[in-house]
Length: 427
Image 1 (tube, rainbow, N blue to C red):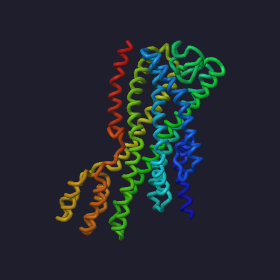
Image 2: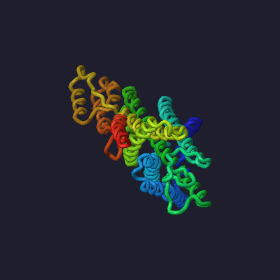
Image 3: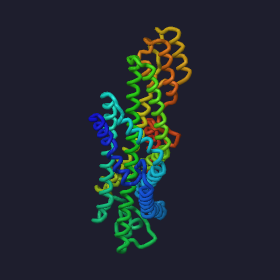
């Protein structure tokens, strides 16, 4: 009983932060949800989406069209409009895919509550702690950005690039253009409050979705690591067939989970890559302009831009890092050792493996389990788990680009090439 309580406490600790944020937004999946709860949740989501679209996104796009051609004003506008658009996409997808996410949450709960050895629990705690640290960092940056962006304009300070064309009257958190005179009371106060609500909703959706994504991927990585440890120790079990069968089922379950995660987040990742590529080039141009025009630089605005840039870069880095960690769990290994000293049956065994699959981390685990000391029949049974691992496990952006650090480096390289073009256009 104490063990079960401890396991449940570990589970609550692992998901608490993500659950709190997504429940506020109404996109945390709930099992056995009543019709009334579902209705109230959907109404809350629709209201928040309408506030974000009609009072933040559409007025920002309208303002962008009016200042088209002024590069500095356009960059100031896009640093808000692009994240708003991406956050809306994330929010909508998470809302529509709640039913697909629910089995993943059940899997996480089952993995935490099922009996496990101390080493497996330590691996899960290590992965969950890393996800929690990233979540805390993301929320901290989110609240700092939200506070600076929505509080300081009340006192007459702004972090944006201000011109008479973009801000002819009283300051607002966003660069927007409305069809009504928003400078008059109470329109100004109402618009300011609705913009603040929209910014909070967008910031929470943007950060909460990414943190939830890291929670899912790190959990699966921890389970893959535990699976690899069990496969390595297969030769130590007396009930070899039973343990191998359980390992195969567990591996198939994890492969299905990765495919579900990829299907849910692939469009978000593709949009995020394009968004970061555009914004990285614009921020590079902005920093270059600020350095050459030091007299026009506001310390407050520079601080805010740095915070937003760090936040944007950290989120994109998070996508590629967790994808890289996923690939590292199934890294390709060429099985050269032991081949010179194995008998004919084992040689046939490895030859079939080479024909079937590309070698991955699971094969390395099978190799390290001392299969060469087993009976030939047992050694051949290892082929089953390797056949199920014949496809590399990685996350993709729009089913086009693998989410790895190499993809991030190529994106930075491509976006960096446009910075000099923008600087030359400015001159």
